[in-house]
Image (tube, rainbow, N blue to C red; front, side, top):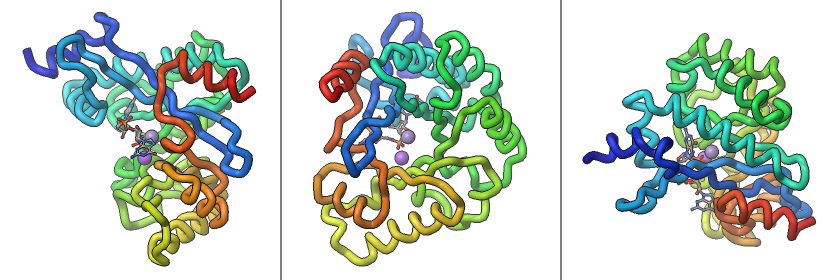
Length: 250
Ligand code: G
Ligand code: G
Ligand code: MN
Ligand code: NA
């Protein structure tokens, strides 16, 4: 049995979970949201990384079912949090090009009675290599429903920036490769500052990924980056642990 055939049974066998990583205001360290991250724990193979199985699911189309499952599960779990938070869900290009993402998202919002204004969809920069009108219309429709979009992995995939104002983004996610161990080099902070300037110019907010030390958090705040996520504040954790974290913070 291959990974692929096992993956096709993951939903019905109840092997999937959504983990949540806190998103924070760096100034006061309050949690304002969570990024949903899919986890697959196979009974025999053990945990399989989404970096490994998402590409397989994109290839064989199962990502449409997986993507819908994540949206439904994450909004259902987020509805039980002790206070309203933003929820960010990663979306694959295939869900836009081959699926009916607008219908999938609106059905999930309705089922969970989750406010669209709190749902953020993360799309990776690599989607925007060519101008894509379907993608643009899809994003605009979801935007009209109240959802927002974050540009994920920013700075890793693409050199021209002209696509940014053509699509309805609210936020840029500064890739964790820019949050270096010390952020001491002028070059490292120069890239971060360039991204912050660009975001300011386009009226977008920025969230820094991969913050692991208090020094990094302090430096980012100093540079003018108000939002962040990373192991310093919390690793991706299961729904019960995330609820507990919110209760302890309250
Ligand atoms: O959580 P982790 O660092 O293992 O995630 C690895 C990669 O898998 C990341 O790029 C992340 O965006 C992606 N990923 C995690 N969950 C999902 C999901 O539900 N949908 C999609 N499309 N990608 C996901
Ligand atoms: O591609 P995307 O940004 O969605 O992927 C998020 C991934 O980054 C998740 O797999 C998550 O586990 C991982 N991640 C989150 N915080 C940190 C961190 O502080 N350090 C490292 N190395 N990885 C992180
Ligand atoms: Mn992401
Ligand atoms: Na990223």
